[in-house]
Every structure is written in structure tokens, then in C-alpha cells.
Image (spheres, helix red, strand yellow):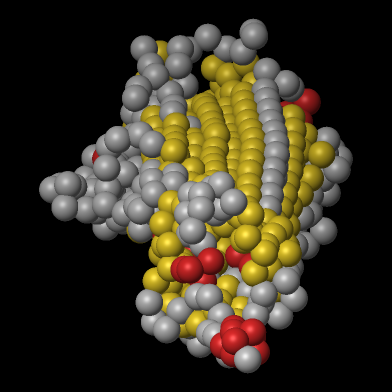
Length: 587
């Protein structure tokens, strides 16, 4: 009876609680059944292994970890965790319940490395990172975010280093990854985003990655895909961002990088914290804007392909850029800008914000629009800019169009060099000017304001009634006797011989390699029979002056002491004509 009583008593005794089981450190525990923590917390001793059998479940509470390892069946832990962990495999957690976001928050706050396996819907919805160094290793997991349009799937809170690797993001609203920080001048490595795929599934997606005042970081080997409305990488006042070997498709902007004044910028110029965008080996297809960059310091774009984008590259008020060895091509659609590469100065800023030190070299620049398409369309007010060694094709109007759009405020053109470019006559071309200069004025080649155009080639051109003026100047002020401040020589084309009586000098221009040539507009007022014009060409040796449209006629009286004197045969009448000034150089 005693034995039976003892047997009966043991048979009905309550099973030990999880806390009663976990008593020794450095121990492997095999767990089975359901462990209800009743809203409390259970502390796991240091360096223990929890081995789960099939069907095991820990529910309703918090599990306090201390260098804990997990083995066995998956999806067993349905509680929050805390404690000290170097690594957690989220595959052991049941993230299918309503508390999955709270559980993911606790996993991230507990471990410095979180591994994700499989597919978890809505797991990362406004998960916050950055209180300590955290690595998220996805192993191909897909993160679906559809809620909270003003939040992010992953929100990086500070500049503490965060590593996010091998995750697929399907974003329906808001942001995929968002990183906002206070501007700081302290250099630090703050993030690495690698081998991730970002897909925007609706127009409610603002940006797949947003960086605001973020310090140094890498975005590499990632894919960005949209529905046409969202931004791939939205970068405001970020510092030293490396975008390496990434692909962008069907986005409003592949990369948008804008400098915005902060409280530290008392003069209301662009922020000094907007600098250092480095894009290497990128591929962009079918975006409205490939790259749009404004008010940044230091921009590098190399070895990339920006193809069939409406506006492949737009640069505004940029200080320092190296754009080389890329392929650019427009789509057939025309929106906003008329060029494959557009370079502008923000007219609301001062001359201190004009484009400086921009080098565009060794690129292939193609237009696909049938109307109104330039290769490069550039506000000519710039300092130390170079366009060199590029190939232009399929433009309709001009290979390079230089325009003077800002007057006063100290705007100027200093040492703009256009050298050794090749221009192919586009099949849609309506105009044949390879380099078109609109309204440039200043002190001339020998002064501080100058454009130098040398050694460019026009290939497979068709000559059509003088339409193809390879280097053309249009004056902004009709009363200027001299406003064409550029030097051109060594430019060569492969033209058919023009017809007799050609006034544009094409036959002469085509036959001589070392040749300087300018066109200027001159008006002799009615009250004068002679008129002096300061020569825009340096020196007088080998200088020849002729008149293109000789209206009355006009004669060249003398060329001496840097002054050209013209005379007219009529009186009491203003006479305007085009003078062609040419000089042969012995290079």
C-alpha cells in the first residue's frame, strides 16, 4: 500500500519547471514538451546548450541568456530574450505570432550577430539597430514590410557599426533600411550592407535605403528594383558613401544625393557634411534619373553602365568630380533635362556654389531620343573643369552644349578644357554643331575667364549647306563687339568638300590640324566709318581676319598692337557683320 501510494503520488506530481531544470552552468539540457513561463523570466546558466526535441515550445515570458547555444528542432522559442549573447540563430524562434516584432527586437538587442534562415513575413518592421555593434546575417531570408509608411524595416539609430548581409527585402511602404544621425565631423565606419536584394512593391515606398547625415559606410553587391516611383539610395548630407557593384532598375532615382544646409551652415550654403560619394561598377537600367547629385564635395563615378535612363546623370553645383570609363545612354522618353549628362549651377545659390573641378573623361555618351537631345548640356560657369577623351553619338542637337545662364554675382568661366573628344553624327541629328557655345563672355584666352577647345574629331559627318558648324559661338549681348572668349585649334573633321562660296570656312578648317579659329559679332555704328576691336587671339603672328557676311562691303584695315580695325563703305547706317579670326599654330 505504501509502495502503491508512493507510485500514485509520483504519477500525479507536477513536471519540473524550466527554471527547476536549468540549474548548472556548462551543461547540455535536452528539453521536450511545453514550458509556460507564466509571464515571468527564466535565467539560463552560463555556457549551456538547450537541445530541443520535436514539438518543444517555450511560451509566455522572457528567457535570460548567457552565452547560450541551441540545438535540435526549430521554432521552439516563443518568448522574448535578454542577456549577453554573441550570436543568435533566429531560426529557433517562433516568429509567426503577433508578438514576432517584439521577439525580433529582443533578439537584436541581445545578440551582436543574428542569423536568419528561411522566410519570415513582416519580421523586420521598424526594428531598431545601433545601440551596439550588430551583424544581421540573412542566409537568403526574405523580409516583407508592408506597414508604417513613415518607418523602416530596419532603422539604424546611431553610427555604431552595423553589418547587414544576404537579406531579401520586399518593401510595400516606407523604407527598407533607414539610417539617420546627427551631423558629426568625426570619421567612423558605421555600416556595411552587402549581398542584399531590395524590391519596392508599391508607390508607397519612399526609398529602399535612406542615409541622412550618415558617416562612412559600404553598400556592395546589392540589387535595387522598383515600380518606377521609389528611390534606390536616398542620400542627404552623408559622408564618404561607397556604392560598389550594385544594380538598379525601374526607379525614380537610382541614387539621389543632395546637400542640405544644417544649423552649422550659417551662410545658407550647401552642407559641409554632404561629401564623398563613390560609385564603382554600377549598372542602372530604366530609371527616370540614374544619378542625381547636388551640392556635394567629391564625387566619383567609374566603370559603370547607366543605360536607357531618362536622365542618366544630373550634376548641380558640385565641387569635385571624376567621371570616367562609363557608358551613358538615354531612353527615348524626354523628361526634365535634354541631355545624356546635365551639369547645372543652382541659380538660387551664389558663385561660390558653381561647379568646380569636374573631370569627364573616356566615357561613351549616347542619346536615343529622336528630338532635343544633347550629349552634355553644361552651364559654362565653372572652375577647372575638363571634358576629355569621350565618344559622343546619337545626339540630335549638339554633342556638347555650353550655355551662359547666370549673370552677375561673380559667376565666371575659368579654365574649361574640351579636348580630344570624338563626335559621331547621330542618325536623329537635326543640327550638326559638335561644340555649341552660347553667350560666353569674359576676358578671353589670356585672362581668367576662358574655354579652350582642342584636338576634337568629327567622324562620319554629312555636310549639309553649311549647317554643320563644328564650333559655334552665339552671343548673349547683341551690342558686345567681342564676347566669344574661347580658343580653338587642332579640331578635325572628315567632311566632304563644301560647295564653292562657303562662308563658314569649313574647307579651310577641315584641311588644317593646327588651327585656331573664332567668330565674333561686330557692329560699326552709323556715325563711324571705322571701328576698332580688341583681338581675342593671343599674339598677332600668322593671324588672318576675314568677314563672313560682307554686307556693304566691310574691309580689314589693319591688325596691330592687339587691335583689329575694320572699315565700312556706307555712312549713316549701323552695319553688323561676323568676323572670322584665324591663326595657325606651330605646335
